[in-house]
Image 1 (cartoon, rainbow, N blue to C red):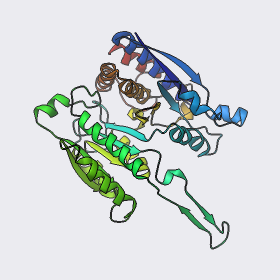
Image 2: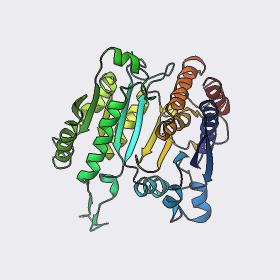
Image 3: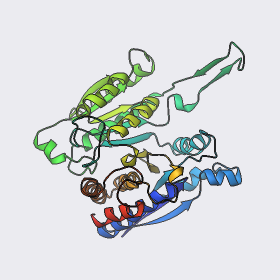
Image 4: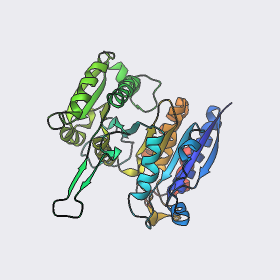
Length: 368
């Protein structure tokens, strides 16, 4: 029986609570589908920083490379200045582990309320691929004459061809995969295939303004695209993308974009799918160690109350199983979540679900 080694970073606030439910579901899925996992906890987060002054040990990335995957709860502590933990833990691990893909499914589950009028689950079901280690987030830049009236700040959007090409190639492969029955992150596979729908990849950019960076992205997009004749190629400026995500989300299948644009549009996507309570994501290194997490923050005001929604963490666990090759188990977790959102929960909001955090996790287990 396959035994996976999973590193667990519970993090701050309600992070450990939602991770506990994700692990409960993973254990049940393993029993049902024939695999096991061994977890090792890492106490990195706000409390560790406040008590030791250390954000991460120097060998943190090396420690995590020994595992098959990482499951993260949430990072963010009310007593720690914003940016310290986020840059010192999340960005540092993404860069050092070369998790160059940020994968964000945008999927409306049954029974979940969306702010988009008249949109149904079949209308909101796409994936955003965000390049995760380049662009403005590399911190290339600086100040001149800081603190004076003539102060100038510069931060550069920098990409290499290799960074662009590997991200685009991953995205083309994903677009192709979403239209096969094996993929658990596409709820309408059989219908799509029956109707002869074509996989589609949309490059989201700003070619009319960022004429150097997106000249590179667009050229490589078309060069790599020639290898995927079965994938329809499309382009949209980032501002148009945000409009269509609201007006016509059904137009999208897979969207690929650079780091900052991806950071922005994925949060918009999360709101259209019903909020952070059901939004999961993965930081992917296709040949290394990947890290999966719920997108919502640590929600410190709900810590210890047993009212936080754990479904995003549960879905992040499902994404992790898909990455590990346990596709049927991942599909079962998503189907169970869809059942309880459509038939059990009163709301996705903390304290309004009609069930406690632990009870929601149990519902997912019972309906696998």
